[in-house]
Length: 335
Image 1: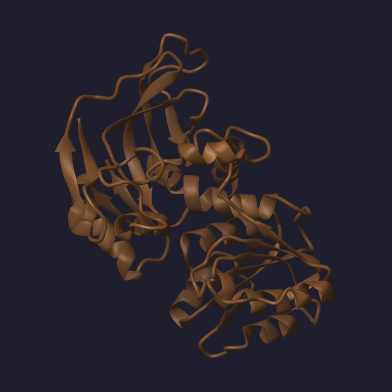
Image 2 (image 1 turned 90 degrees about the vertical axis):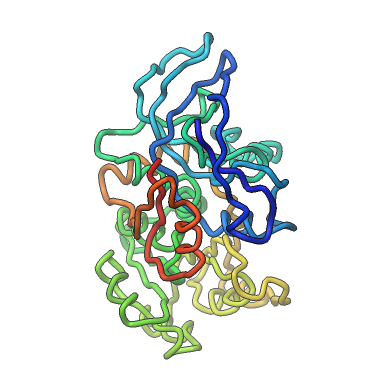
């Protein structure tokens, strides 16, 4: 089979195609013929590493993949060759509270990822796909989609009458918008251009605030909510945006802290949280059960937004496209 290996850090040029034997499977594993993978900002961090984001040189990169089972180990029951599946970002976290040891199973970082024609994975980890979800759509979900799902599914219940704030148009934020709308929430979004604002409204955002035109966007969000604020913030910026997210929070609202895109070393005062009795909840992707729930929700309510699909031989170009930040939605590689 063919696969990509990241020979060293620092450049997309270090991502090269190699050939090797198909992976052997343990009794409790299945071998999956990968049909599509998607890229995340985390994959760029791995390429350009090395520390703290870069894995060991020589790893097969990328965490998000979907395909069909082609072989099952001798102890596998309840699933058979031919089953269409998606693979979790963290196959060692099946359900329940996060166990720290499961982080050692993160694909494309701690262990080899899915930018390959075939992979071996624990049978209990894979999630079967309904017919309504394509390989490309499924491959978009394990990292960004599950992170957004966890950000909205943990903590106080969300539904009609609740307001969610999403920041920007990255993969997590777009998924969060779609999931929040599926839950019946009102969504307010921030972005930097009128064109992106139009796209966000098409996806269901009731209000969009251009943070370039309105640098103190938290004030505008309070105006849009009659001074109350929002019940949940899907916070992808980190220290650079967290003060305004806290200022935009409703009484006893929650911030799902995901990213550190803007000035992660800043010092932040927690005092605004005391005013609203707010909560900051750290988010670390999610479990196999979270992925299964997201797949079911998407099959019924929405299609993941895909910006562009590249061929397997074009994988370096797909990474370059993601790095250009010209995309809106997920960048997918068809295998």
